[in-house]
Length: 332
Length: 113
Image (cartoon, rainbow over all chains, first blue to last red; front, side, top):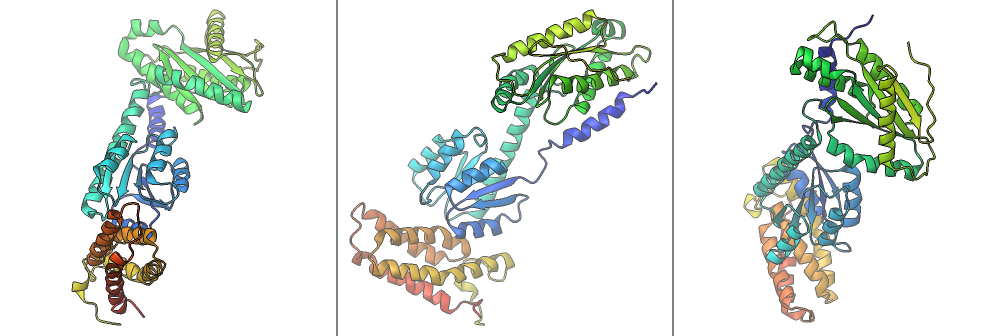
């Protein structure tokens, strides 16, 4: 029988985590109608470890911001057609660009302009002609703040033990993914995953052993999931998966792989005690426009999980929203 | 090629990064002078305000502090006119001085071939 050590799994997980690293060259977007300013900042920010991109009017600048998601925007206030205030307002109205920090550039010295810019959500204000060492320092400080805030918000969404998303992140994403699926007529599946007789592991081998199982199973889940899937720790020994653009049949196959891999792991704290899990899946087939609510999908997945437990555990049970049981021949 | 006068620029023309900026600005200056002349001839104070505002903001960064401060004075005068932007004669001399200053830089452009 094939066995797998969790330490091997953790290596893959670490590599996966680094792709979300904030330690890449940040993109800075300059929106200014004056080619002089583009030339000047291009030369003067060359020594900074940033990648500077530019647009010459507010409308194009907004589009570029939404497509490139820069870490910082330098925005000129005095532009013809769509001025900096209007651009700033639109950037802050768009959920995609709302959190990108904006440093406002202006030839005006009036504190009225500064206050207005801060009120609209600018993080800083730099006057022209530029004091270059000051501009560099302000760019650096804004980038650092942005990186820290991103890290914080990421941490607030992550469950510490498993490294998966936490319950509150799941609650946020559930409706969002459901709405998207209905809008595009895409399939969408949910899976509730529960470790079988987990309490026994905690009671017999101690909580550190239980923790090792939780994080080990989380790593298997992460490895089997695709990048679009949203894997969350739902509670104690329970996990939930949101699988966009995935029919209940496809979700069944994915969860079967998780189930099989889990039962094959040899755990260093209790080599003779295997860990198995049960899964309940419910989902929308493609083209569903029905009024089934996301909460109802989760409830049905939960009922399927209960049925899986009743029928001997170490089992995956999936249904579509019509209540039809998904029949797929078990692997192995 | 004319010998560069290091005193002429508020950046260091012997520094490659600085020299690149000075060269770029000098290359753009003839167009700016044309625009200034056209705006004065048309008594287009709005346009003069825009041009001087841009020069005030940009010139110092490229090593042309003097152009920046003269342009800044013109911008201030135009701003002080309020909504009644009609008195072109009151700023004509200053705009001419700005044009002359720019011309002197253009004629001593060390990068001109």
